[in-house]
Image (cartoon, rainbow over all chains, first blue to last red; front, side, top):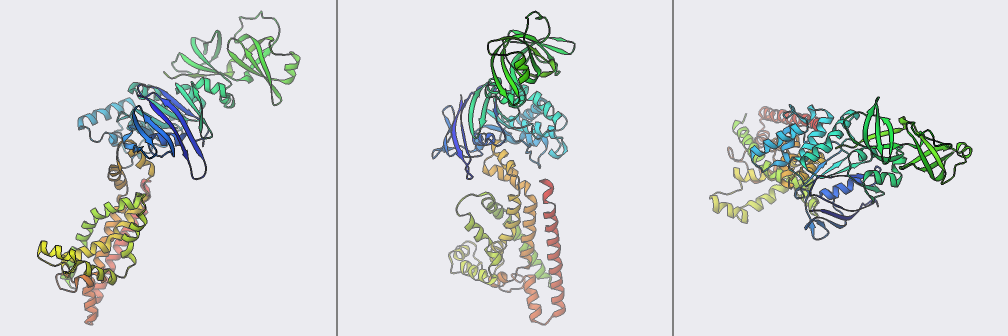
Length: 357
Length: 221
């Protein structure tokens, strides 16, 4: 059991979308397809689902060929893939229950009803079964769309920016539950997003797309750090962290071999990413005596790069760090690669992104 | 008032609309969503009765349905009666003539159905037929209803084809519009006036109805 996709799609206007990756379909796992708007993420999903036809390449699940030019083009209805659009695209002529039951056609009535009830409960849609799509909120509509896609037990569910059309609170709420829901049902998923925090919080794996191609494949933290995408998104260094305590509204985090204090975003979690922006890290030369002070780490300078009017100092403090300081400060401290310094990290400059369980 | 003619017209129009519905629903599918080469030809063919003089259509129908044609002969050996100058022949002619009046609003409505809904239906396991009957058609119900009403109304007033194929047999093929023609020929202007007014009022009511349906089409968008 494994999805193998390797295809190219050329549009009349000249854009070329290329994708090549493998995906395990046996068990739950959330893969984030990440990249800026217009880079071709949606096209990749549509080709997988059978809503768009590639020009070359293949898509297959194990021995079952879904697409191969001239040989096979399995229609969407026979691929067993769930699809959730950005706007929920509910059937306006059916009730909430009718929408969820749509893909269960042909199964015994009792089984259909039981499955619909199960999903309504799982999605927190209790009491809304008989409502029309126009009579529920945006967040509820998207839950119905998700329930509808999951009801026929698809082997893979494709989520095309499912939170984008929701207001902040509704999006946040659904985002918190998404992983748990998919995990409960054991359905692997591909989530399209351009939000790095969403990718970090939800993804087990990240495929990075740029200009129509998949350019990186790894864990979200790796990919975001390696490519500088995290830095560009204003997130700084992205470090894996574990909560070891809570003190006066602050989290005590174990980050590699060091401990840091950071503001608590709230909620129950143990694993998280700590995103440390260079603006919040200042440097001191001088003695190593004040080790007990919070968020003060001995570090050695790896290299120094100009960054506009500032300098970007890359540090090794047991974990990678960077510091953005003025050129004057850099000269006053006579900083140079290899030198030992003290890195002071403002707690407020650390953003904690809980990893959804 | 020629009540016999009115009754006949109503019966003819109602039967032709009911026969048209299944045929039109099947034809509207490829016209709205088909991506094959002959789609334009099919569209032109089914629209022909809109622009063709009814006499031309009527002439070909007589030739095609007459006792010397294969269709006419088959029908005669099957039922013992002829198709031309009978109600059955008239009905068949009406179905063909009124096809575009049924198809055009329905195809337009089908074209207006949100494409993503059709795609979602596909990902949920619906084949093309399932998607058409479970999603597209229910969402295009206003077009379906408009088509039914329009083709019914047009069948009520059709003149040329009826005259060519049906002749003018009282109680069998003399419809209201032909009765009106007879009244004018006989200088019965008062009678013609009543008949004409009836058809006028009917046509206006029907068009107002379909305009109202079209105006409300967007409420489900």
